[in-house]
Length: 232
Image (cartoon, rainbow, N blue to C red):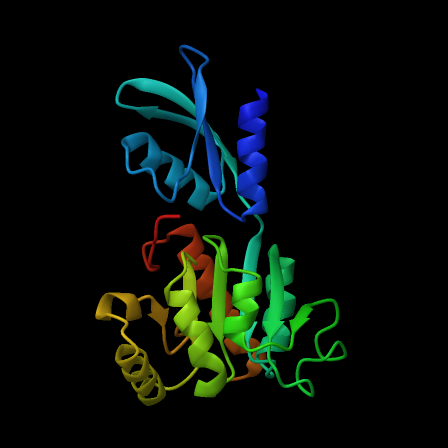
């Protein structure tokens, strides 16, 4: 691996972007691919490999390649230090996410309630300006308060994050979509929001709801037939 390639990989890591090194197995030549922007057949293969988080061989248009994936860490941003956020933060940490809680209410977002979890007492749009959402980010809005949730959702809709979810009933979600539509977001933009959040497994308790949310995030990340897939 030459210095230029290593520099490119390190730059992508610092920017929390996925990068894929494509190596031609016939010639030994290779180059870096940004899977979020490369629409060539090889770029599409790189995007699939990055989404699956798996390096390996690929045959593209008669040529054999090896795709080495360099993904940034998974990131879960939770708006609202509510009861559901507690088991969700713990479960997501176990599955490999770096978890951050965003809630300006200092009485809720405490170390005692979220031991070992990164806490931000900023408003969501401020927190995401400081630590942007990337293609490996998932965001869940759990505050159930438009003043807290909506600014974060607006930032998420303008970002390449792979999952956006929001807590609330169908009626609450419809009102949320109307507010965001009035802010200039299109129907296509708004279709990215999973709401009501989580897979329909009949969840009732905070822990069960957390399971349903994490399952939906995983489904979307891995691109299962039930989930929505986005390139990144």
